[in-house]
Length: 248
Ligand SMILES: [Zn+2]
Image 1: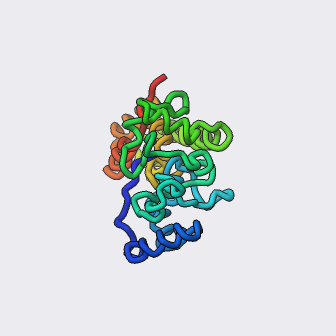
Image 2 (image 1 turned 45 degrees about the horizontal axis):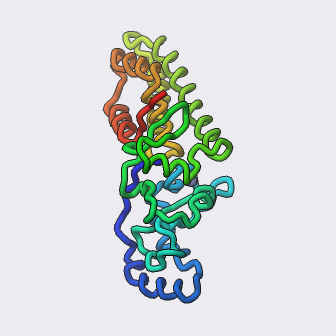
Image 3 (image 1 turned 90 degrees about the vertical axis):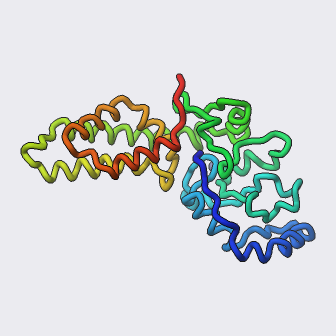
């Protein structure tokens, strides 16, 4: 889970909000299923679930619209822009009509998830009651649906760190091996890009990369050999903002 920046309410929703709310109260229909609502939500989260960071639109994981405060209890919020989030079916099923007014969970457009969550052995844990409840309600360590896929992705990135380290260790800047240098830069950029918000499970991947001892050694080698770039530093700085603390 990463912090999301909510854009302004779509102009069409500003115009239609009252009409759609009235319609919902009468019909209980899916009045939020409008592209002027769903498209900006998808864009806001880079087409990922706002809670578990799985990719939406793949493997049958179509985007659903989450009503942070449940629509069946808070009908006036059915198309309230600040109440809508992009969510996967799995998280939506777990959250159901859970009343977040009574017991709050993390709204990633308002709160910064790493302030409330940490990682322990690839499992998300709560730093406080809010974090603990969020993990529990959404089952954010669901083995089959979440833990295994995010572990596989993070583990593949760790393998890339090993490959990049082997390459950079044998790289001699004095002999000007341009091809090898390009290969190293490509690999390191690809590792760091997977730590950015466009990629699935970016918070977990950032955490795993930045807490990997070999990554530190890799960076030192890159710096010493003069191939650590400003672009890499910028990507690393971004990763630092979304990573979780690690506790054993
Ligand atoms: Zn999800």
